[in-house]
Structures are given as C-alpha cells and as structure tokens.
Figure 1 (cartoon, protein in one colour):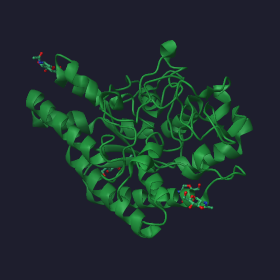
Figure 2 (cartoon, rainbow, N blue to C red; figure 1 turned 180 degrees about the vertical axis):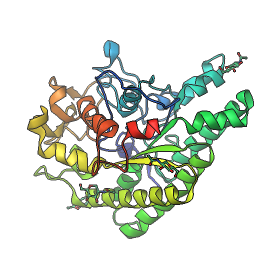
Figure 3 (cartoon, helix red, strand yellow; figure 1 turned 90 degrees about the vertical axis):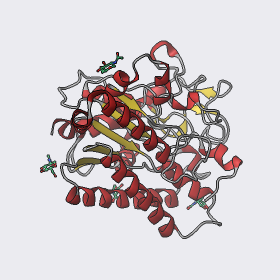
Figure 4 (cartoon, rainbow, N blue to C red; figure 1 turned 135 degrees about the horizontal axis):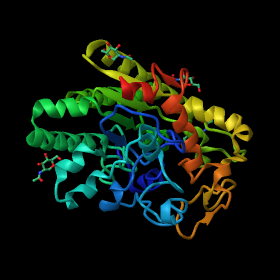
Length: 360
Ligand SMILES: *[C@@H]1O[C@H](CO)[C@@H](O)[C@H](O)[C@H]1NC(C)=O
Ligand SMILES: *[C@@H]1O[C@H](CO)[C@@H](O)[C@H](O)[C@H]1NC(C)=O
Ligand SMILES: *[C@@H]1O[C@H](CO)[C@@H](O)[C@H](O)[C@H]1NC(C)=O
Ligand SMILES: *[C@@H]1O[C@H](CO)[C@@H](O)[C@H](O)[C@H]1NC(C)=O
C-alpha cells in the first residue's frame, strides 16, 4: 500500500488509540537492567523532533501537563506510555535514539536504555513512508547500538545486559489506519492482516536475535473508538475494531510460537482493546466523564477534525477525557492502562505481567 501525502497527513498522529503503563506509585523493585522501546506515536518521546516530517508534536497544546508545561514531541498532554512503563520498572524513561549522537559517550547512553519509537511508524515500510522511522528502520538502529555495546564491553557482556533488559514493542495502529483509508483499493482484510503479521514475525525474530529475551508487546487498541473514527452518532467503527482484534490475535500466535522455539524467550501481551473498551464502558467508576470527544482539536461533533495544534481548542478537564486528540489517549488514560500492564493479570495482560517479566 502506498500512502498518498494527504493520507499521510491524516495518518501521522494517529498511532493508536490507547495503551499504557504504570504510574504514580513508588516503583516496585525491578530486575530489568534497562528499557528499550520500539513503536509509534503512542510511545515516541521525541524522535520525530529530529526528522524532516509533518508528523510532529513538539508544539502546544501537547505537553501542557508535562513537567514545565512544555511540548517535547510526545503526542500527549503529558507523559506517554513509554514514560509510565519506565516508571513502573523504577527506571528513567529512555531518551530518543536520535538525541544520542549529541552525547560524548554514546555507549554509556545506549546501556541505560533507548527509545526508538517514531510517530506514524508501522510494521509495513509503506506506512507513512519517509515520514517516520519505520519498524524496520528502528530495528536497524537497534542493531547499531547492539554493535556499539559489543564493541565496548564484549559480546558476552552485551548479551547479558540485553537479555536482562525489557523490550517494549508498540506498533500496528498506523498500518490498520492506512488500510482503512484505502478501503476500496486494498486487498481483502484477511490478506492485509496476514501480511502485517508476517512482517511483524520477522521483526520480532530480529529483535530476539539482537539480544532481546524479555518482550512486552502492547496490542493495538479499539481504533474504531478514537474520536476521528466514530460516526456522526458517536458510535465506534466496528471494522476498525475488528481489524485491530485480528492483528492482535496474529501477534499473540507469533509470541506463543517464539516462546516454544526460542531458548530463554519470555513475553507479556497486553490487550489494549479489551482494557480500553472496558474503561470506556465503566468510565464513571474511574473518574472519566468524556469518552468520545477529543480534548484538544477542532471541528465536528467530537473536536476531532483537526489535530492538536496551538490554534486548536484545548479542554480544561483533561483528567476526565479518555482521548487527548483525534487519535491519542490522555495521560490519565495511559496511567490507568499502564498500571494494568505492570501489575494486572489475564485476560488483560498475559501469560505474565510486566513486573513478572522484568524479574524473571
Ligand atoms: C563509555 O562508557 C562505557 C560504559 O560505561 C565505558 O565502559 C567506557 O570506558 C566509556 N568510554 C569512554 C571513552 O569514556
Ligand atoms: C468504518 O471505516 C471505514 C473506513 O473509513 C468506512 O469505509 C466504513 O464505512 C466505516 N463504518 C463501518 C461501520 O465500518
Ligand atoms: C521464561 O522462559 C524460560 C525459557 O523458555 C522458561 O523456562 C521459563 O519458565 C519462563 N518463565 C516464565 C515465568 O514464564
Ligand atoms: C482482546 O480482547 C477482545 C475483547 O475486547 C477479544 O475479543 C480479543 O480476542 C482479545 N485478544 C487477544 C489477543 O487476547
């Protein structure tokens, strides 16, 4: 699938709908040496600031609730899932890979954890081509830091370090959105999902071969319930939600297969679709009052025709909104889901949760 530029324009910010990690509380003990993050705008902490792309978030109102009230490149009002995952592990939120070439000792930075994620990224190279670091590009960068670490401390120590670290992969929503936008000119849904899953399979294998032994896979969310996917009655798009579920199903079978074949491999899968759908249904119990509309945006019934920009409207009660902009969750939503990722259980997170995975 080739993205036209107008499609890309629509796609960029929308990575997924939702996901998240643990927050707030004092971080429990962790055995993870470091955190490495690959994925899309749900976990991008500023890589796209360094790219010539329209897919950026380094302007207000993004970051309005971040420390200092400043935009950082996160597609959020505050911290995103990568930050909460790190906090849950008692680790610093890893810096963007593209910021590291400014540091004197790169290897030292590489050993502390790196975030490769890039807004707009997909499993498929064609998703938002040339506008972000695709999953394959992110893995190339992972291979480069792996080489640098080996060069500095030797292959044996490097493998020990990486196998004790936690790898988070959060990808797929942009490919799904890309498919939905080309609805009439693309292959049948099953064929498209199969090709996504087959690319993902190669990518996860490659990540394993580069030293990852603890993999946290964040499934795609209820994409059809994002503000811009809802219809004029405010109802979720069931086609988008079912695509998301099919992709997640494929991802889980890949992970199971990897576990049965690859020595010392362990994983956690988080069913974002389930956790967020339930949050939407039981929103009042968790302090949310607005489950459909974007907090920041402009236009339409749901404030979702235009992304969050300095001229967009920005709501005051951000902790009460599930969605920050037309496609991304608020910090409050991510904080809620992150807690489940860290300490929850099946059917939300399985076969083990993030904390169990990190302490194996
Ligand atoms: C860079 O950092 C690594 C890891 O801390 C260390 O082993 C190495 O000696 C450092 N290299 C330089 C040139 O300071
Ligand atoms: C869902 O989204 C697709 C793609 O935008 C659209 O073709 C379809 O009509 C929408 N509604 C339903 C119910 O699938
Ligand atoms: C982690 O993986 C190893 C190797 O497959 C397995 O023996 C072990 O039981 C796994 N640990 C957990 C907690 O699943
Ligand atoms: C995730 O939860 C949904 C319910 O929202 C369920 O239909 C789906 O099978 C689950 N997917 C996986 C991979 O566990």
